[in-house]
Length: 482
Image (tube, rainbow, N blue to C red):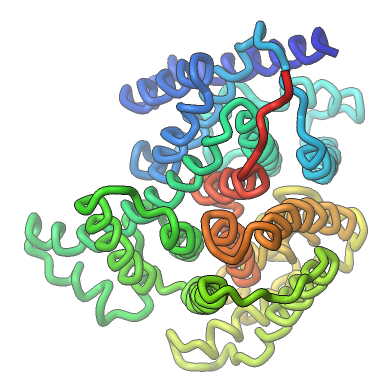
């Protein structure tokens, strides 16, 4: 088994290093991004548990670090994983039983994604049947992938799933050697969100003072359709990141008076940045999540015990919430006034019709990973076709069902349910306050925003969630017995 693990690591390192090397000599990647990737690679090889939190701090800034077609965030993440794979002489640490329980559904979802990718690859021009698809599988990560954003969407989507599963499983594995890692990961996610919020708030007046353009101020304050985040183009994804950071920041404030003051300033800026993002789903989910956290923490401080709830009941309640929120979009009207909540719900109701029409063509296996955007025009309602032409589903659960079928959706929900179940069971044992509660609550609220958005399609935000979820299930991990 050890020899197989080392062989797999060596193969993974070879593929990743080939892609990184191609990006390095392409001439389109800025030198500072290459330097950051080199630091991530060295950190992943030398001290992965210490390097990972710093890598997560850099990840949300990919769009600012390099313009399209460079995939800066993925370059840094793949470099870190390449360094980790190069630790060929490292003695494997036995995984805890709960790690195996959450790893099985994650790997199953990965397998379903790869099979779906091969189905799509079979229909690509120049691929001669399954032998050609098998050859494509061997070059799963094209050498020029990191410098070709926008090409081969199905491959990019599948590789994002590979990255998500890798990051999710790396955190509990490293936590077996360093029990403090989950806390540092959660702190990095929270701190990164606060920094992004501060810069988003500061960016508007800074741009004015440097350019004298009052319209930039008006763009965020009075012009309702215009929304923005300093570090991301997808403002809804930015809102999801802010909410995750907000809930984690409630219990992870640093020591020291000056640091705490800066932390509170960041939290205040986060509220403003969330409003600037204009994400109604994130704002609503955030208000509810913070309220629930505050009430339960208040009850816990007064020694009041809450009734025990089984993971199955929690999962059923969560599924009911997702279904209810998905159906609630029918309350809106696509003919409402511009910028209104009714219009937003109405547009998403049209997307619901589009997704259901697409699902009907392949309800069990889906139309193929990463193909929703390209094929959406075939199923869109006339209202949507006039506005978008092509677009994602604005509901990640529906998009997963449409692309991977009911089988893929159930595997995805099983993965999330198992992971969050571990986190919430730890909360039931340790109490309704502290990092475990904030992490479980933050990850759960993040998923609520996926009902009207698709933050998982944005690597800069999705990676933070998967790292936080991996930290949530591995909080309080015990070192292996020697």
